[in-house]
Amino acid sequence: MKKIVFLAAALAAFPMLANAKSIAFPSDAPVASVSIPDSWKPQETETGIDSTSPDSAIYFSLDVATDANVDKITDDAVNFLAKNGVKVDASTRKDDDSNEVNGMKLTLLNWQGTDNDGAVNITLGVLSPAPDKMLILTYWGSKDDQDKHKQEVLDIIGSIKPAK
Image: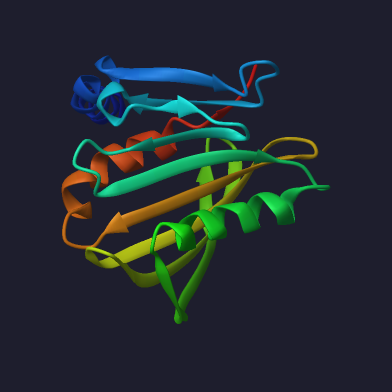
C-alpha cells in the first residue's frame, strides 16, 4: 500500500519535475541543490539563488550563509523585501521549528504584511546543509494568488538537498 501511495505521489509531481531545473549552488563550491520550475526563471545570485513565479505572485530565494555572516545575509533578505515595498506586520510573527527537509531541520519565521499590490505572507527560514553552512530561505507571496502556487512551492522546498 505504501508503494502505491508513493508511486501516486511521484507521478503527481512528475509534470512539475519534468519542467524543473535542478541547480547546485553556489556553482563554484556547491553547498546545496534545489529544483525550481523553468517558468520561475531561477538564477544564481551573489549569495545563492532566486526565482519568481511566472505571474510574479511569489518570490522565493535561498542564500548561503556561515556562522560568520548569517546576520548580514538575513539583514540583506529583510532589506531586499523592504526595498521592494514589503511592509511586515511584526505583531503577526509565528515561529515553526517542527519541519524537516531531506534530513535538515527547517526553522520558519512567518509574518503577514503588505506590498504595493496588497496583502502578502512573508517567511524567512533556516536550514543547515553542512557544518558551518546555512541556507536562508526567503518567501514573499501574494495572499490572493499564493494558493495556486502552493504545490510548486512545496515541491521546491521538498527538493532542497545538501550537496554531494
